Image 1 (cartoon, rainbow, N blue to C red):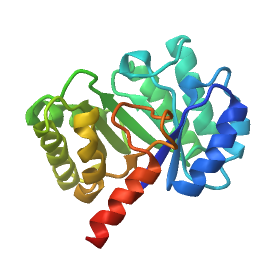
Image 2: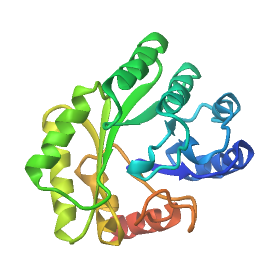
Image 3: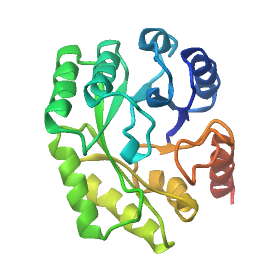
Length: 228
């Protein structure tokens, strides 16, 4: 099971310090550049110590903090590609020509995988709608599709978890889980269904999304499951 720790920081220096801690605890680190003021990507990616890193520049309407123009947002992701980031994450709601720009940068550089993501901040739709979202993300050229919803009922977790084997049968690499307190179980269960990874915060107060456990809590739950 791969655990990814998001790094939420307000400066490049603070991000580098948190990255050092995160790499000692996680399989991957997600660098949330939308939270960092004037991020120095060259310096930040030089500090990855050959570890895999996901660079995300999240839109505000999908839970992010980026305040610049859409072109500026995409240019930061393209810069991350040029600097050799392991993965970049772009939202499915992004204008297709911007996604194509990122895909072209990846094609030219050849070292980065594209995550196309969808975040539903209000609820969890039915199976058919989730499958359509999956296909729409894949059609944008995703190497990995990320579908995240908000759990309003415990049953919502089952809808999202069912999406994982559906994607795998189609040969798609997928990340899928529910946000919110009622979605916590999906964060632990998703990798057992075949999700590429799950997210856990570096510490309390460092969450990048509601319902996120700390990496220590996540590992404790996993130890209990495997030793019961």
